Length: 135
Image (cartoon, rainbow, N blue to C red; front, side):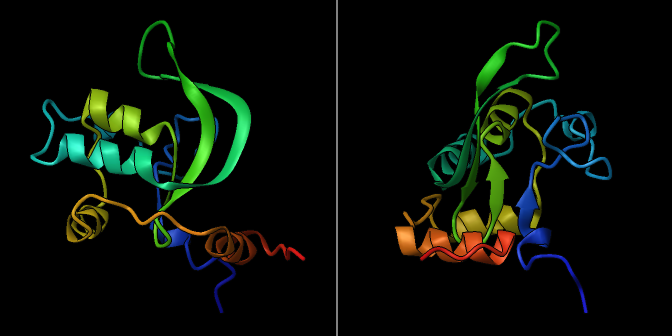
C-alpha cells in the first residue's frame, strides 16, 4: 500500500531548483523551451486562477534570473484534481516551462477555466493531503 497522498502524482512544479521543490523533482532548467506552446498564456492564466489551498508569507524569487527578481508570495493552488505552487505560472509565462501533457489536456478540457472550489471542497482536499480534520 502506498503512503503517498492521492494527489502526489498530480502535483506540478516541484522543481529541484526551488526551495519549496523536491530534491528528486524534475529540473526547472531542463524544462525551459525557446517559445511558448500554443496554449501558453491560457495555461498561465489557468494556473493563476486556481483556488488557493494554502498561503504563506514567504516570498518566492525567480531562481533562473541573475538578480533573483521577486515573483510573489508562495501559495498552493488547486483545481480539485491537480496541485501547484503560485510561482509556476511565472515560469510557464517567462520561460515556457514544459508541463505534464495530462495536465495540459485536463486544462483544455475545462476550456482553461478552473472551477472555483468551495470552502468545504478545500477543507476536504486539505484533510486528504495533510491528514487534518477541521471541526
